[in-house]
Length: 348
Image 1 (cartoon, rainbow, N blue to C red):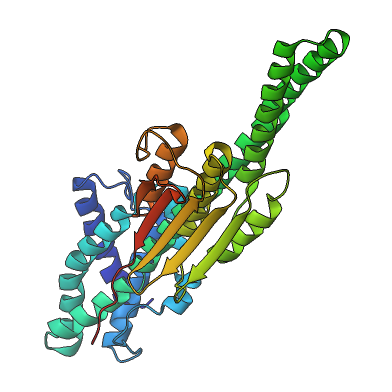
Image 2 (image 1 turned 180 degrees about the vertical axis):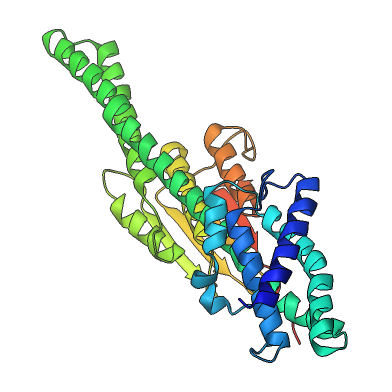
């Protein structure tokens, strides 16, 4: 930095520290600005004054998002320190207001005339191309942490089901079978049958919890799940997909996958006189509609409400991704119908 740039940066940093302190910002201490924010401020002042001196170009597009990896280090650092993402954006706004008169005054001295509009443009560009990528990176870090923690929780629960609960059921089952061998008894035989079903259900749930979409498309992951969980006298799952497939976020794919697997498990467990389960994905320009139904008799007590733990979980997962879900109950079509709306693309 030149001597002039250093002097302007020092004045801006001093006032920015005072203004952010007054606001109680997490980006300042009593002594100084956050180190990352101070470095960014110096870089912004240097770039702005270089552009105004004709030493650099200030293009119309501030952020080249293809370079996001190189521009987002500060955002990842803020996420690691648990700094709210609104803080850097607020600081950017304060920085613009603080720096504008300092840079304008320095330019007026250098060139003998004020160039406020040029200063505002160059300063806006220098700030904007740094702070939004940081905020985006912050959100990406949080999203990654959410996905990781969600996955870890499912794996941990699967391990508990397999290693502790299923093991306990199996141990009790073995003891009852030993007793029944020595002294046959109808009630013991019924208890053995119930425990066997409970053991199979627990093992199935443990397997389902470890299933995931990964990098696959939703329909492909569901087909893999249907194949992996087939057999053992379970209802077969038929996956169909119609319409032009649109990209989904990883979070949406994982939640939809979990919703469908939970709905198919409900059918396999509770459907009466059913022979199969259908999972249909229907894509349109504005929505994805997911229907999971079995061809059984349905329930005698009317439409299903989202009161049971499994159905409540389906409703909560749907709400988390902005989808709505309806619980169906009709002979030949009992299950769920979920609608995920897309943001309508603007037209020019």
